[in-house]
Image (cartoon, rainbow, N blue to C red; front, top):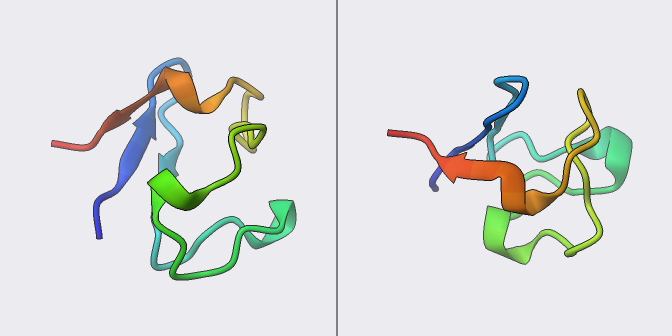
Length: 53
């Protein structure tokens, strides 16, 4: 699965790990995260994430 990087802070969303502290289960693709999810480090929305090269 593809990883996505938060452009402001550099946090990497890894779908194999998910974001359990925010209720996103391991194995959840970035596209399947709820639209109101925010970066757990800096709080920006999904629109500030880019596909990791």
